[in-house]
Image (cartoon, rainbow, N blue to C red; front, side):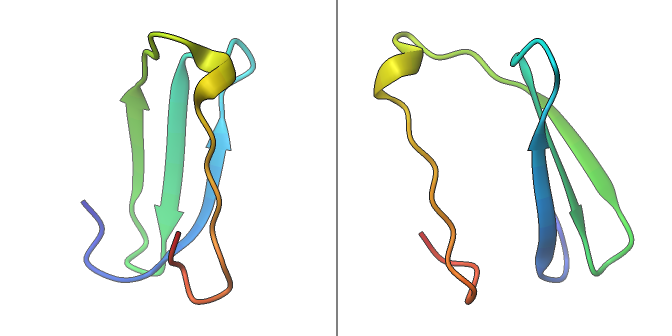
Length: 50
């Protein structure tokens, strides 16, 4: 994972991959699958916490 705070996250156009970039100057990508996509929510505050 990131060594410093994450500054941005984004879904790919097809919604299968999640990408993040951080102040550590790294970009990570994950293949994400959900059993029921409608029940999955993500929220992030200014402090970077859920």
